[in-house]
Length: 261
Image 1 (cartoon, rainbow, N blue to C red):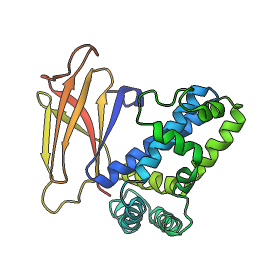
Image 2 (cartoon, rainbow, N blue to C red; image 1 turned 90 degrees about the vertical axis):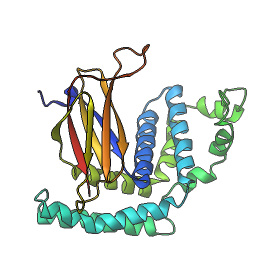
Image 3 (cartoon, one colour; image 1 turned 90 degrees about the horizontal axis):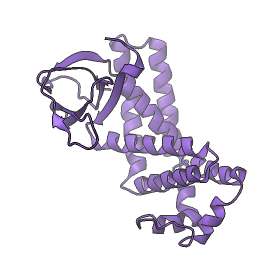
Image 4 (cartoon, helix red, strand yellow; image 1 turned 120 degrees about the vertical axis):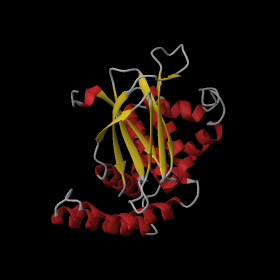
């Protein structure tokens, strides 16, 4: 089979709540970054929605504490990449030092963790209407309509300010996920009759996240369930959006990376 990226669809499945939160934040940050770079009003709306959803994630639990715990764990776990021959000694030291620097930044009282999002009056007004269907129409929020009518350069300046308000958090999230992804090497697997299951042998490293490559040419998609000890993957086929996904009956060749940093 060909090895080009266009031939595969990549799926990621976190196996703990901390990584679920980090992946959600990464998705929102990428959405905001992409949308705010475009000049259309609809794109500015998309960026604002991503900022508000980011704020909602930030308000859940002790996010700063969870990020610090993850960075603290990775600061020592980077040595594993050296013992496996995946990184050179210099690379291990470089990544560990960057991890410690991020730890210091995130741990500072004035760390950029989204405070600007919490204090912005316009975002607060929009957030109050966010849960109502079409609650941000121009007649619902004249102040939002006025902001969207401003020149793109003015909107971009505000969006950049909001985006920069969680710069330290963004750097920590992207760093942690990059290391986790690099810790997993894709290997060829076969789901017989569309189903694959495997237990993690006792004493093996704990898998933090699964990354799966499914063939683009096929209409299959994986349904992944499991935990640190047992993973089950069931492939479904949906050739048309008008029909319900059905279990695949044939053998499915795919690739799987166990990210265990």
